[in-house]
Structures are given as C-alpha cells and as structure tokens.
Amino acid sequence: MKYITYLVVGVFFGIIMYKSEAASWFRIYEMFEFGSFHMYGIIGSALFFGIIGVQIIKRKNIKAFGNQEMQLKPKKQSVPRYLIGGIVFGLGWALAGACPGPMYVLTGAGFYSILVVIGGSLLGTFVYGLVRSKLPH
Amino acid sequence: MDLIYEPWPWYVSGPLIALVMFILLFAGKQFGMSSNLRTMCSIGGAGKAADFFRFDWKKERWNLMVVIGAVIGGFLASHYMSNNTVEINPDIAQKLSQEYGIDSAGEAYLPPELFASDQLSNPFVLSILIIGGFLVGFGARYAGGCTSGHAISGLSNLQLPSLIAVIGFFIGGLVMIHLLYPLIFN
Image: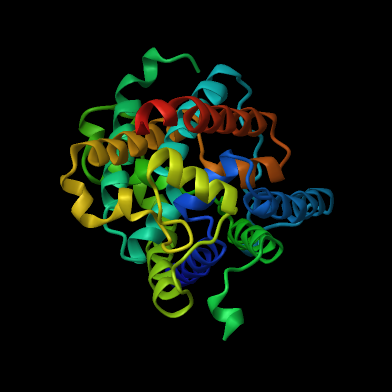
C-alpha cells in the first residue's frame, strides 16, 4: 500500500516535469543562455515555498508520519566534492539537456534515445563507485 | 482545453515541485532522483566491483517506485496533456538554428537532431548522449545529489554544501553552452 503512494507521487512529479517543460532540452539550453526567466522561476518559486516550509517544520519540530524524524540532516561540509562534482554534473546536464528526474519522464514520453543517456549515467555512477577512494572529497 | 494543453507557467510548476518535496518529507523520505542510479547499479551486481554499491538497496525501493511513477507521468502528460512542442525565446531559437543547425525549437519537445531514434546510428550523436549521461551520473554521485537533491531539497534546508554544488552545476552548464558547444557542434 505504501508503495502505491510513492508511485502516485512519482506520477504527479512526472506530469509536473513534463508540463513545466523542465524536461525539455530546449528549456535547459535557453536557461544557460539566460534567454528566459522560466527555469529560474520554477527553481526560485519551489525554493520560496521550500525554504519557508522547512523553516516551519524545524521551528515547530514537526514530525513525519508515524512520528518519524524528518530527513533534514545537515550535509557533510566540504568544498572540492560539491564544487568539482557539481561542475561535472553541470557539463553533462547542459550536454544531454536532461538531469536524472526528467530522464525517467522522457522515457515514459516515448523518447527512447534517452535510454542511451540513462545508460551513460548508470555507467558514470558505476565508474564513480570504482574511483571514489582516489578522488578528493 | 487550453489549461490542459498549454505548458504550465513557472509559478504553478515551482510550488508543485515544493509540494512533492514536502509529501516525501512527511513520508520520512528525502526528495532526490539521482540516488536511484546507484540503487540500480547495486541491483545489477555492481557491489561485486566496489564497496560503494554494497548497501541495503531494498530500503530504496520506495524511490524506485517514484521513478516508475515518473515514467508513467511522462507517458500520461505527453499523450493526453500536451501538444509536445516547446516555445522558447525566439532569439535563442534563431541562434540554435543559425549556429548549430537545430531548427526544431517550437516544433518539438526535444530536438530530433539529437533525440530521434534513427539518429542513434550517427556516432557523433550517440557519443553526445553517452558522454552527457556519463557526466550527469558521475557528477551527481560525486556531488552527492542532482537538481532535486541539492537545488531543491538541499537549498530548501539552507545547506551550504548544496549551494556550492548548485554553483558548480551552473559553472559546468555555462562552460558547456558558451565554451564547448561552439567547439562540439561546429
């Protein structure tokens, strides 16, 4: 039963990604060309509500369902890991025109070439796992 | 009908994305899409090759359900809720056409020049898709998250590491579009 909930959340997320055009290569390209406010508006307005909501959760110590802790643990501090990893991700995001969430959405939309991108990202994840101990974190 | 077929404006889409994040938080989970790639590697047996993939992936099954849902959502939206074209800034569309020969802005959801299935036999296009995917997968795991995990979840929680990661995303994206695209696509 719980899994159905996650499935429904996923369907909802998929529809939002597709309908907002955040899953479109054109919108990603346009964003990095600063050609439109659209993508910045999506991320910005999500953050506006996200930041307010998380602050309320923290200040009122609101618990998740079943009285579990909210998954809001602070992330480990570091610079190289986030900066270098982030730059590598950004290069791929702009080259493929898709980040992980939209990749799944585009598969459902019938763009089967995106499966090659997903294959590449699985390979990238795998190689990261292999060389992880040799990278600065 | 316009409401269904027209693209959703940013001020509708952004708050709905925040809602997805809050639903998952209340379920005791964290919104993040790229960690599924690690889970899929583990299911495929990558634990034999690296410790990084030796973890209890069964705990991540909920997130794979989100992935399956996203696939279904993409199917529903593209078949019943969209005319599958994306209008962008005309200046940008013109630049794409003139400089890179991508003429499909306003006529398609993804450029067929890169994503039409018959283009997979073109080694240049195939390498772009594989390398682009590789960088996304490698970078997301190195940075510990992608657009959902850092730019939405992490920044909502005012995490400095997520801000550094998002700055990295944009450095990488801007370098790719402004410095590397002219070299790759000309």
